[in-house]
Image 1 (tube, rainbow, N blue to C red):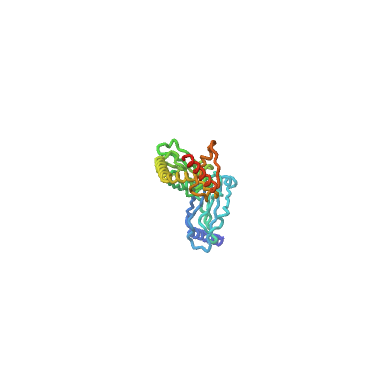
Image 2 (image 1 turned 60 degrees about the vertical axis):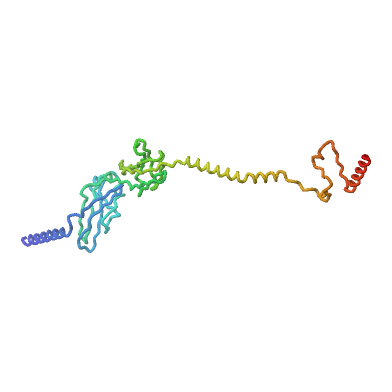
Length: 308
């Protein structure tokens, strides 16, 4: 009996010493933390700093439903016996429930369990707006966002400085967008709101203000150009008008060449103009040159006889 008790005491002491030795191998915890931004949840922990042949980690979580079902835990299969020291729980923690989360660190045949100190709810996520860059482009304002996420809505508010109550709002769907300075030159201010509808959370960027130059007054310039063009055209026309008029007169009063039948006539024979031919009280008989000369001689002789 005594030997039995002594043996039992020895085994118990050995188990107790082994337990203490085993506990001394591990730190008190893995320093678990969770980082949640824009509905993306990442669990992180400190790596095990012990000399082990193999080290891996397994992540488990427990929602309110699992807690009510005999205090059961679910294994995140994407983080089962992994060697990394972080785990993406975005899809796993998909309801507005309080979650308990724990990590099992296995070193060879020994296991250390560490639980997140506080429960996590996705409503606690930090909503961040993307970085916004504002640049004036003439009479437009160019707005660039670093990134856009489908589950986050971005509303951009634009107003002229001093008239914030007259701000206009536009929903942003592209990383780069252009907006008109509809009130002319001056200082315009812009601010963007990020809206996460599934948890009814909103946050805003800082206000960015840019100066838009007053548009140039082009009407006097247009008038000056029009006057200069008019003077140039008038000068050109003044230079070419005499020559143009001469050419026009020549083209309208072109002298017709003589017929071939009249080219060989003597210069002494009078050629009747068209004006004489058109007179209704005169008739002209054109004779052969020899007959005309004979007739002229007879008329001259008759005149001499009358004088004698």
